[in-house]
Structure formats: structure tokens, C-alpha cells
Length: 183
Length: 414
Image (tube, rainbow over the protein chains, first blue to last red):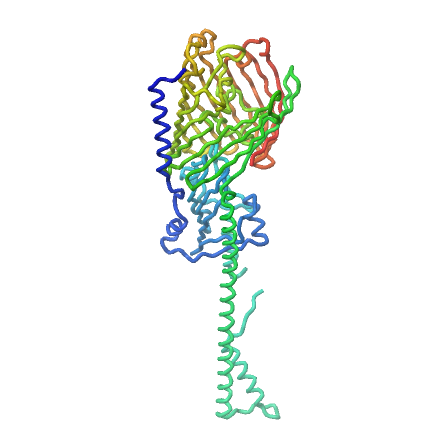
């Protein structure tokens, strides 16, 4: 039989408000722009961007870390005083996650999700998850030197951030090689 | 290998030295040049220096021009990529994924069974940065159609809106936020060839409904869900009387006289830990009156803890139904729980055991069961599974027997 008038009213109001809200109130997607991230990292003195060219072993290792070829022929970075900053993207389950990373001689200094577009796995945005990464280094086989505890139901988002952390650490090593006059 | 070039000044001194040597006399003794000769040498060296400077500047300019051309070429390549993506922007904004699982079951007293249990494709599309579509299309048991054992199902088809940074809304067909497996059930993410029985019999996973929902989350790891959806239409007579799983309407011309309301609170503020509780209220679990089954409320709570190689999952779910017929049948309280510890001795291998206790509507849904098994992940998205289970039903009857079973499975996701 039909529901009571009160119940129908409550349900209809919920649907209506939801749709109304959905139509007129839409949030901006990025939590922090790349420019704002870089200005924060380099305290308003952002260096000129440089690039790592993806060729030879660097290209192969990059593909090995990501599990697929990088969609480009170079990766930009910003480097100053032994620190490098990277803005990288990797798909979690279905949508790309944009991540800002900073690497120094002691390992990964900072990882921050700049844009997250997945329906699930929002936890990876927050410090209670990303605080596991600072100080992480790369092992000789390009893995992280510590275990990162995951988020239930967000395995693919967690894995995407781990891949980008490994990639930034590896690429930082390549910039050190490039800038080393004895090499 | 590094190349070292002579500076113009060094070159000038070498030239001067060479001309000085040429000025040596026939007896091999150097001859001191006159002032005029020295002036001539200096003039000549100066001209050489100027020429070298000019050459160096031209080389530097050519190098800079070459750099600019190379940069322009790279930018052009990248712009072409971007424009190509723009031409087919729907391709760029449309995603495809999926999962599947093949099961072999060897159950005591039954024929052995090989079944492509699930073949699933996801299709998603991002209309804007904050409006997206997601769907899940599934074929169960390989072949669907009249007289066949399988089904074709659309388990998800909804549009989601980002309302605020921490607030989302969706409308359409979606999975209810309840239990551990209902929303995340790709085979590589759980132990056991078949899904656990509590989340099949008490929580009728996969459980999807049509309606609208809100999802919000806080910086500290607490999130909440509210949903208003179509409800269950449970049978009150026959072999499946008061069986929750038989009440799913699957949004197939679903009777929507009496809606259902779901609320969930979840905490994931510590990596590896999830604590959650869900309440689902069915305003009328049969969608009709005077049939002896009225309201129903599901209470569910679970915990997941994964720390390093050790893992633990535990879940409890209970239905309370009102109505004279359901009470008379003794099915007004249906519940189940399980505990599942696990250990990964190696990155690609996981071992587990699970104990389940159920009290469902049918005789065969009232049992306790031990299960042990292993998962092997040759790739993080591919899993091979094996398990052994031993079931003891509360009261043996036709179709409700104790049994031992051995299962094998292969699953994937992409």
C-alpha cells in the first residue's frame, strides 16, 4: 500500500533539497593549485622549472614504477638548494589523483594531494594518512623503505600515492646525477 | 669524457710564443724583437682575440637558438597531445574498468561445480570536475536469458555531485553503505573464493537500490552517509518466506510504496583501521500491508584492522522485524557474525581463517562454519584462491545438511 503522507513528504523533501543543492552548489575540485603548492614549498621564490627527459633507463624505470608508460616525454620539476618539487598524477580506481611531492637528501619531505576525483578513498587526502610518508627513502629495487598502512576500501588510491612517492624519489636521484659535475 | 677548451688569452700567449721562436736566428739563438715587431705581434694577437670572441658569441647564440627550437618542438608535441585529447574529450573523460571471478566448488554430497560467477565492467564519465557518472554492469553465471542460470544486472548507475570539499551527493542506482563487502567486493580485496555468508544471507550483498544519498567526511577520518532509497519486498510465503535476500527488488520496476532509510557512521582516521556502524530502516519490508510483516531494522557494525602482515576483520549484523506472521515463524530476529584473522608471510601470499555463525530465515541459513584458506597475488590486481570449509547446520533437514567443501578460484580487477 501507499506510504503515509508524512513519510512521502519527508522523502520528497529530501530528494528535492538534494537535487536543488546539486544543481546550484558545486565545489571547485582542486584543494590546492600547483602554483600555490610551489609557492608554499619555496616560500614565494619558485625556481625556474627544469625537466627530466624520459629516455633509456629512466623511461624504463619510470614505467616499471608506475606499472605503465608515463604519458609524456619529459617530467617537469622545480629544484633549489638540494630540494626538488614535483606535481604528478596517477589514476587510482578510475580517476587521476594530482599529488605534490617534495624530496630532499633525507628522502621524501612532503606529499600532498592537490586534487582527488575518486568516489571512494578520500582518506588519502588527509594528514592522518600522508603523515606516514615523510622521511621515506627508496630501496635499491626502487621500493619504499617502510610499510605504508592502507585504507580499507581505498586500496587503489593508496597504491597510486605509493607509486608517485617512489617515482618522485627515483626522479630526484636522477636530478642529483644530472647536477653532479663529477658524473 | 670532458673537453677543455683554451681561453682566448691562453691562445694569444701561445701565438706570441710561436712568433718569438720564429724570430730566432740562424744559429738557433733567440733574437730580441724590436719595439715595432712587438707592436706588430700585439696587433696581430689582438685581431685574433677579437675574431675568437666573435666566434664564441656566435656559437653561444646558435646554442641558445637551438635550445629555443628544441623547447618549441617539445611544447608543440605536448600541445598536439592536448589538442588530440580535446578533440575526443569524451574519451579522456570516460573510464572503463572491471573485475571477474571463476569458481570451482567441490561440496560434499553435491556435483562439483565450475562457474564464471561474475564478469563485471565499470563505465564512468566525468562531466565536469565536480559532476561524474559511475556504473557497474554485471553478468552472473556466464549466460543469462530464459531458461539460463545467469543474470544480467546493472548494480550501479548514478550521478555524483561534489557539493562542498567534504560533501557529496548522488542520485540513481547505487550500493547501500553497509557491511565490508557490499561496496568493495573485487575478488583481489578479500579472502575466500566465495564471499562470506553473513554478508550474503543477513546483509544481502550485493545490495543495491535506487534513490538519493549524501556522503560527508571530516578531517579527522570520520565520515557519514545518509540515503533514501527503494526498499525490500520480502516474500511471506513459500520456501523463501521472510528470507531477506529474496526481498531485493534490484530496481527492476521496483515497488516503491514504502521507502527505506540508511545511515552509516565510519571512522578511518588511523591507517589500517576501520570502524563502522550502519542502520537501515525498512518502513514496510513487503511493500504491502496486512501480510504479517511490517517494519524491519538492520543494525550492522564491523571492524577492520590491518597492521603490517597481520589483519583482522569482524562483523555483526542483525535484523529485527515486526509483524504477526514473521514472529510466528520465528524469523523476526535474524542475525549473523564472523571473525576473520589473516596473516601475510610474504607480500604475495596471505593465509586466513574465518568463523561464521548465522541464524537466517531458512533451515540451511542457520549454521556455524569454519573456513581456512589462502590467497596468492601474482600481481596486485590478480588473485588465485583456495579454501576449505566445514559447515554444521543447527538442525539437519532436507536441503540443510552438514558438509565440508573445497573451493578454488581465480579473480582479477582492472
